[in-house]
Length: 88
Image (cartoon, rainbow, N blue to C red):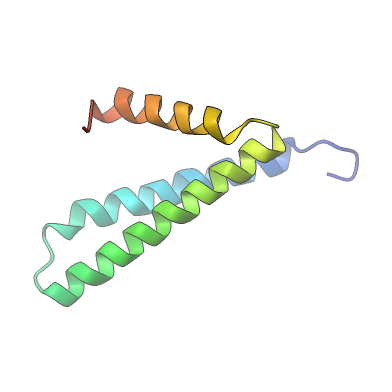
């Protein structure tokens, strides 16, 4: 980092974003099987917090790479459509 090489930092942030997305997806999947409302609420809160932190991490990577927020939104939207189909 001292020499201007941000590759390692970008790699760490990307791994963090992927892990947080995994936490989000697992909690959403298990949300349906929650036996109590309080359990469902906890899973939903964890999922939403992980999703928000993943988004913030992706934006941090974009800043490091000088990518605009609009470009990031377009990339995420395209990847989501490719992975999950049209969600609208």
